[in-house]
Length: 235
Image 1 (cartoon, helix red, strand yellow):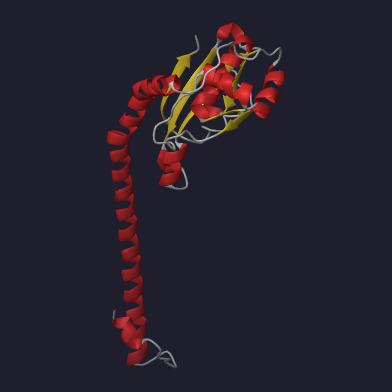
Image 2: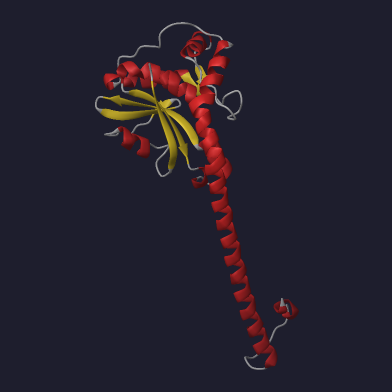
């Protein structure tokens, strides 16, 4: 860069060949730097677009396939080797009673495979944990599944569902965080004519008129693009 040749020189006055040459070189430098910034910005945009295309073409279908089939097969296999206690889910008279008990007797815990492949705990395994440990620890899918079985009697006409959502990971502060937080499982249920959402160890305080409103505006999905979701009934 020509400007480097003049680094450290101090020119007095506004006239003269050296002064003009310095101003001219500075203009060249600013234009050149602006062009570099624009090029870098364009490259970053192209890389981001390429990453999104790769994610939608390869990673997203794998996630969807896992939630549709892989999770069910692996969970059934894993639950055969987990300690179990047969029985019925705890009974509650009011939603407030459930909420206080659930918050005190559950804890979120990453699945044994560290998020690579979630395993949904069975109700029998949850009952065993409550009997022997006093608390049920599991990932979001196990908490949603067991929580739905506890909430079903409190729901309107058994409208209680386990809902899996996949959010756009590129909308998170970092792609790593987006991959870790982009997929989540919750329990959606209708109670006294309003839709509520159980996420991990607590029921969100908000209430919604429709299932769609609850899906789009609950604290976890609000402001994010939902790329895919799945609704499962509890039998």
